Image (cartoon, rainbow, N blue to C red):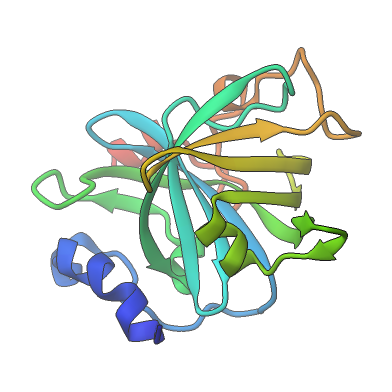
Length: 192
C-alpha cells in the first residue's frame, strides 16, 4: 500500500484548511517514533501512535495508557495519520472532525519486541496479525507494552508488561496532563 493510500481516510475525514492539522509532510528525524496525544474532543481520550514507515498507526485509548501491568486498557484502532502529526498541538475547531484540543502528552522512540517462533515479526505484520509488543522510551512511558486485538478489526487491549517501567502506584494519565513539548495542558489551549 502506498503512502497516499494509507492517508486517504485521514484526509477524507478532515477539511485540513479549517482544522489546522498536518497534511502529510515529513517529520524531522526518522526511525521508530511513538507519540501519545491527549485529545479533549467530544470525550477526553489519548491517541497512541506508532510510526510504521511513512505513517503513524493509531489507536484511541479512552482512559489513557497505564503503567500498571494489572490494568488492561481498551484501544480502538483509528485511521493512520501522517508522520508530521507527531508534533501537532492545537485546537481543532468544534465544527471539524475531532474538534477539541490536542497536546503531545508523551513521545520518544520505540523498539519492536514482537516475536513468533523466536523470530522478530515486522510491525506491519504484527498489526495485521493482531498482536504487537513494543518497548517505549518516552518521558512518561517506558518499558514494554503489549497490544492485542480482541473483536473485529478495531478493538484492542493495551497492557503494560511487568518490567522496569512498571509502577502500580503511578497514574500518569490522571496526574500528568501537560505536554512534553510545550508544557501546555488541553485547558491552556481552550483559552487561546
